Image (cartoon, rainbow, N blue to C red; front, side, top):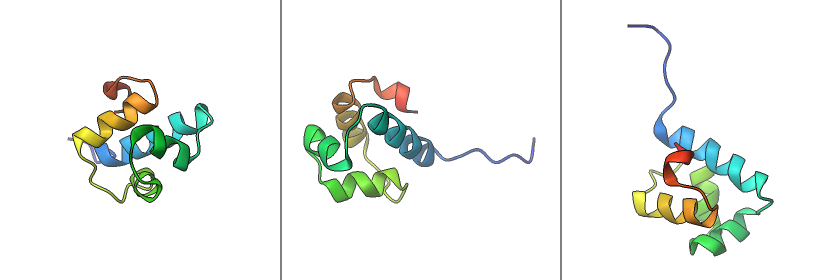
Length: 72
């Protein structure tokens, strides 16, 4: 087994969320509105501070018009 540590799914999701949001030109507030979530919640998810539920992951994926698997 190698010594390379893999990034957690939460960190991967956070980075991909920010990447897709910025690519689409959404602010955190705009994305939050589309996903029916609070802006501060989206920010904390992007920073990897939240252990986000699958339901909220799905809301964000829909708001970004991607399949959830593309975010992981």
